[in-house]
Image (tube, rainbow, N blue to C red; front, side):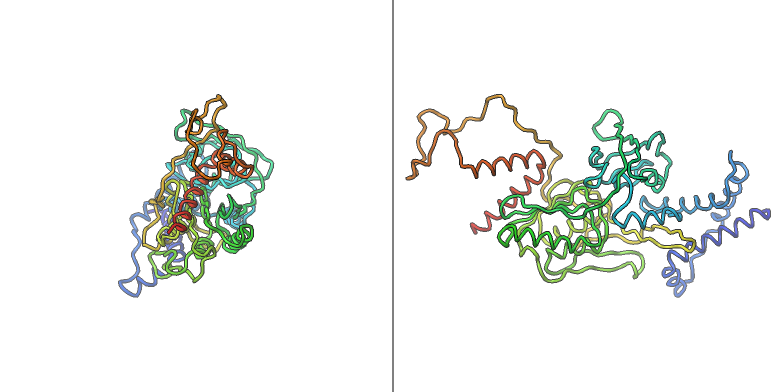
Length: 447
């Protein structure tokens, strides 16, 4: 072995040991107290050193040592799973900006699949959502650059940028014969976590787009306002977690705790005792036991799956929609000495019934297909009813004057019908959730 190879081997050996001690110091210490530290496979380290030398000497273009070593670290992490990665100084800074809730970009939460960038979900009211980007889309080109072979961090860097700047996305979508092209203009992404409104008297709707620091407290404020708007009480609640990519674990626990009186909410289990913990509910239910329907779909991931799983296992809500994304792993950002960091998968989430979310997702209690409901055409034909038949028998009610043959109804009934028709066309799953809540309330009152 020449001096270059030997020096490189020492360098890489020190690098490997440094990363190991930084990432898993507690694990190494534990092993030292039992059977001693695990020995590095020196033959593999030597092979790494040899590859380093061959690249330095034979690659078509000259590459500096720093670039090669950073790429080696990236490969070490990206080879583990789609969510572990190396963050250089710029990427670490961008990560801090991204978690602040405001940044310049497109508003897409993404992951990697088969070398392409997969859309986990578009964020509400962002350029991506407005352009029609959907959960499950595979991004194959950014402008004229193929994403094949591009790291996830590099792809995210290219999609972010100054508000007002443009980018072209080429995506492959299931069911489409050819790739789709979208022209998007970057914007300042301000993620509002909570939106709420009354669907109809007594029934509320809360949309959580992602989980931020204030999501739990904001939820309580919105529910309080919904109660005031509905004579101090809700008969039912639709909790919409569709296309919610997740966010902060503490926020997911806070939202779940708002509806669960006692027991476990989520358990986190990793290799070491430091990565094992269980979050428990505290007494109190902000809607006093009123029924809940939670809407999920394939874009519901991570923290939103924790909420859906907790409410489902506690029999506190009915889950409606399609199977969720299945992102049940915990990523820890570990700062390194040179202002860089690594994002490392350190544990898995488990629901109260100890179901693992990872790669399984949450299965809805009631499945809804992705359907589009269109308004009926004005062809002059309407279904016949008994009241439309000539010489039909009257209802028999003593209030004969209220029985009319022309189908007229009061203004209030017409207004409610219009609202229902609009809801069916605009958001069919919400319409179905509302009908289910009404049925549950009716059944409860009859009992």
